[in-house]
Length: 400
Image (cartoon, rainbow, N blue to C red; front, side, top):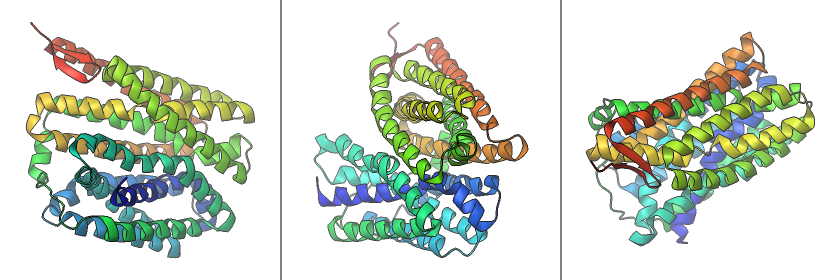
């Protein structure tokens, strides 16, 4: 592995940790800052909005900057954002910190894949991207539970200081090892990105993505208080449950990718969305039982993010048909749809907790995920009606 690719992977690990560690720290932050659980949950929504807005807007605005300079600037912004969180005296400054780091997140993954492919031979491009994105998976498996443990024992601000240190390591690694003269094509302008949003078939895929993730995050945002208040787990035990969840997610991602390869994206997504909706319904029943809720969370992790490979493959194949001049733009906007779903789900979850109670996030989340299943089924029907057939590699035009 080139050392530059390792630096990108460390960056992805740090970014993934800071994005998801907030879920384990919500009860701690709420208690320390004297805010409600729904208000603490907004820290998830605002970060995701920063990603969703920052990715297309800032990628277009920074298109002429050399890639290495942009990468260094992003990691500096990420580090500063986490330092602001560490020094935050109250809720308002923590919101500013989350938005700053979200902006860095969005642009990093827009350019990170391109940089990774420039670091290796052409026939190893896909593997290079997979290595970089493995930083996100490792963050879920190790960074989030470790960060939760640190926050519970040494204060939540210490977690963000530790992530800042990771940001400095990633920044130095990129400074030392990423080549200066990286080739890059001009990114899509905002006008080109808006043109993609005028394609109804692509909008339908984005709706599938947003609903699938939104339903998950209605409940996932408040997993820690649910485990503590309903499941009877101690704060220390929550970090262990998150470790189990992260391992399950890593396995589920591999399984979801293989399922999409074998059945095609539409068939795989329909199965995953149905399973995810079922698990969330079961969670509403098992939440008050320590052993059963642990098993349910394990099952949840296996399907919660297993839809990512299928959704990304599907949006690319749809873009090849409906917007062949802007495939990269379409793929990037699907990342924005993921984060809009996270933002909306966390916000809705907060309203549900405030008005109905924690337990109701489970079945309402299941209904939203089921809506994603219905949208997927509708999209598959439109494919068949238009003469497309789903194959293991995506969508192909059927012979007539």
